[in-house]
Amino acid sequence: MNPKRVLHDEVGMLELHCQVLHDLEQSQALLVYTAVPGSESHEKLRLLSVIGDQSLRTGAE
Image (cartoon, rainbow, N blue to C red; front, top):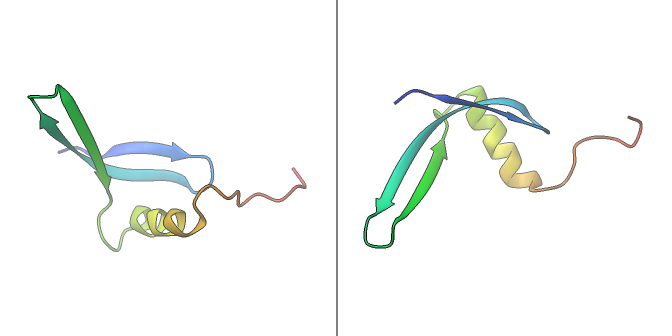
């Protein structure tokens, strides 16, 4: 399983592992992205779980 790199607007680059769970009867797939515990990406995901869709940017841009 190769890590995927995702650039997030608020926290920057994330290195994530992706698992795909298939439901063949419904022709659906669920993608689950995780980060290695203790990694910088893991900490960024934890931050995102707290801030949700709030912006970290100031109005001075």
